[in-house]
Image (cartoon, rainbow, N blue to C red; front, side, top):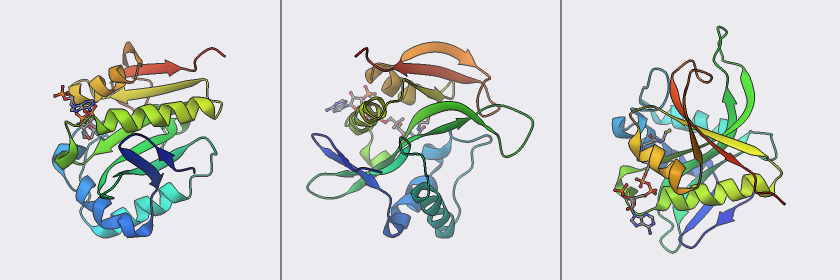
Length: 179
Ligand SMILES: CC(C)(COP(=O)(O)OP(=O)(O)OC[C@H]1O[C@@H](n2cnc3c(N)ncnc32)[C@H](O)[C@@H]1OP(=O)(O)O)[C@@H](O)C(=O)NCCC(=O)NCCS
């Protein structure tokens, strides 16, 4: 998983030492309230350690989960994900849909600076540069902040769909630029 750099940010692979930040991020209701079906917060650091282990073991060369840090201070500010999105269906765990989704989870202390948009644009570029032809994003219908990120990075809104995660989501799509 390569490290990406933007004007203000570094997107790098998660390390075990980042577990305090991951726990701080995912133990907050304002972060988790639109994520998961049903949403739930992390309740212990051990959960964050397991999550980081899983992210580090992703073996698809064009998928990645990056911790986002500020250049200069090194402050950790969020998580940027490019991964397989599960299809809705009866079996648990849900089966892969074959589509790739992009997602963003940022710490509330760092909302409102354009960091999610800057990181997401870099991840989308990486996806297309790696050969993906199409990337989707899904948000809860009420998650206006996330929908704005989708639009800011140039994704198209395709309306609501029950296709993924066994839930009704707003669906956004980006396709690779023509060569
Ligand atoms: C979704 C989420 C990442 C959006 O974070 P965000 O900080 O609002 O998004 P951006 O990085 O695009 O920042 C945009 C905001 O910063 C402002 N901003 C300030 N400086 C900026 C800059 N240099 N460039 C761009 N925007 C800037 C924009 O005006 C905008 O504010 P507004 O929405 O009030 O108009 C954040 O709300 C979050 O982590 N939520 C919890 C997790 C979640 O729900 N994730 C999505 C699941 S689908």
